[in-house]
Image: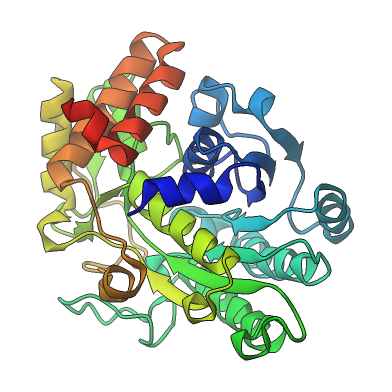
Length: 366
């Protein structure tokens, strides 16, 4: 990864991030600010005062807008006013459990919201690159022991997975119809990529019904007992900065007019980071120095046992590669929460430190 090239590309650029108040969106925003970009964010309000977006005071550092991405008129007006060079679309209803309770909201947010963003881009000539972020759960899961590739069948068992697969298909339809790389610079000047990643962890995520936030709620102010539904389920854990670096590389290469970068991309860790839920929980509690686990059987909805991605395309064609091992990921995650929960004001400094450790490892060794 050529960090200098990323800095040079994003410096001075106007970048629109949807979902910037969320976990991944906030980390992406922090990196963009470090690289010298002007960030415009549109999202719903953050869920809690403990979220990384609130704890690090991001609202005061960017052009911050709170509204639903399904609001066609407001989104179009914002795009016309800000004239972004690059768009990263992360806004979504991202929770499987909530999708069972609110399937219609999940579908409209994830599908119609994505279409709204793409349509607004269609009428905003300043946009040269758009990265549409979906998830590993877009794939029709056959419980294979090997990773899914970008051309494998899409599907979805639960409302969340189905909505994200549908959003992925909508994004591909827009890419072919309005942002086709074969007609780039002739009928349009925008290139679009679709990015898929899953089981992303790191500091500042307090979402409901996610493993790491559940661990942190139990340890910091809770009972100290982490309840697990499927401790043997294997997941490919990666730190949030891993896919964020991939998104940034896509945005840069698209913005430079590389038509062969347009399309779908997987970002996932190597096999050494494919570990069971119970194993990750045990290591996290060990790193935090407190807490215990218990197994519960109150969840009767479908949940995949194994779902991993093949990132060979990104490694070979994009030059992306996972930098942190699962142990380094666990340490960084635990360090962030422990620091921020001990001193709320430490959230900004620990976020900056971890970004620098990831993108500038040579400085750490000096």
